[in-house]
Amino acid sequence: MRFSTSLALTLALAAVATQYVRADDKGLHNRYRWTDAHGIVQYSDVPTTEALQAGYDVIDARGSVVKHVDRVKNADERKADAAAADASAREKQRIEEAAQADRQLLQAYPSEQALIAAQKGRVVAIDLDLANVKISEANQEKSLTEQLTYASTFERDGKPVPAAVKQQIEALSRNVAAQRKYTADKLAERALSEQKAQAELAHYRELRAAQQKAGSP
Image (cartoon, rainbow, N blue to C red; front, side):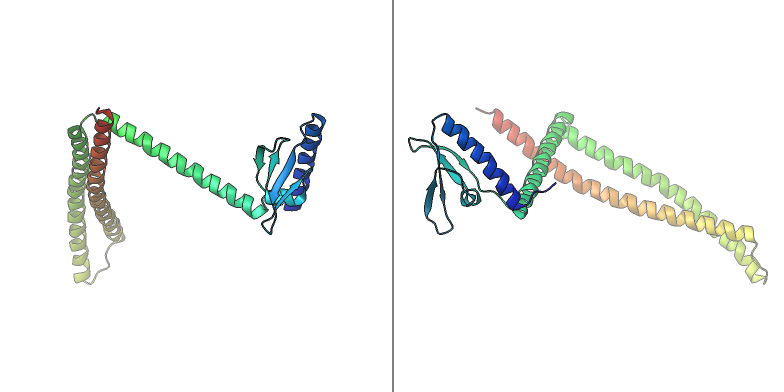
């Protein structure tokens, strides 16, 4: 439930008034100091609505500031504060996750050579997959060509192409198209892997350099 600014002020006044009574019972005689809308410093023995709206200092009998109380914020300001706190929490989480990823990177690869070997291994795995797909794709294309040639004999003789032949051609065409797309996707993945590897290696070197610098006298 969200309170209005006026209700928040009322509750705050009640709370401060209670504190004032308790302080007075103890003989502390605190006073309240704030700056009004005209820039004039005001004092009061009891908290006022203006003090709550402006923010105030609690002053003891010796004139020392006991504490400062910020002004009561309106709904928009509280919403903005909540959004800022949420953004700050997300940024803190991002920094922590990045630090954890850095630690894992250094632990997984004790040397630059180990990292490079792992990166090359990922590219080799993609290349092997591409080689296998190309063989399958070539076989599918060969079968499709044969079926198209077979279908053309019916067309040349003025006869309808059998339904089974048409279905086979359609299935082979879909397979060839799918494998070509898979090959294109794998090539893009390979290029991205190499690009990421360069950035990862550069970051790894930065981490190791910082680690060595921190350990140097």
